[in-house]
Image (cartoon, rainbow, N blue to C red; front, side, top):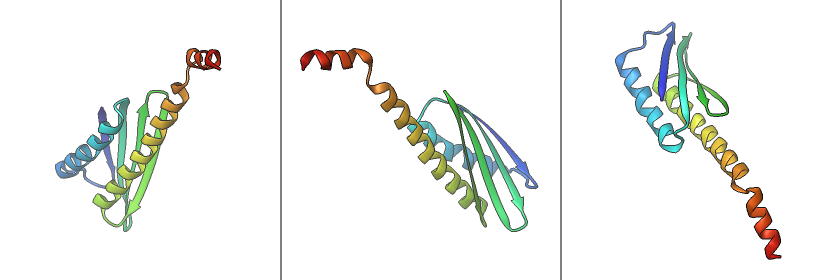
Amino acid sequence: MQINLTGHHIDVTDALKVYVDNKFERLARHFDHVINAHVVLSVEKLAQKAEATLHINGGKVFADSVHEDMYAAIDALIDKLDRQVLRYKEKKSSHRGVTSSSRIAEAEED
């Protein structure tokens, strides 16, 4: 997974880069079909904002989080993305889980 990290009104330090990379490894464990991720870290007065767009097979997933601490905003962002990716994975597997051949086999048994 390729992660593009940018900052608006903030210098993206090496510590922030490493922190974001470590957090995105959690998403890669749950769902390995993420093509790339674009993460934007920004500061607006006292609010620290983190937002990300994941490009996955078949669509995009977007989430953002605002907090007083940038690390807490990144944590909340990853939690939101994780929930969305798991929900997408469940939809994809449940939609593809029942095939027409299995339906025919069930109908023949009855």
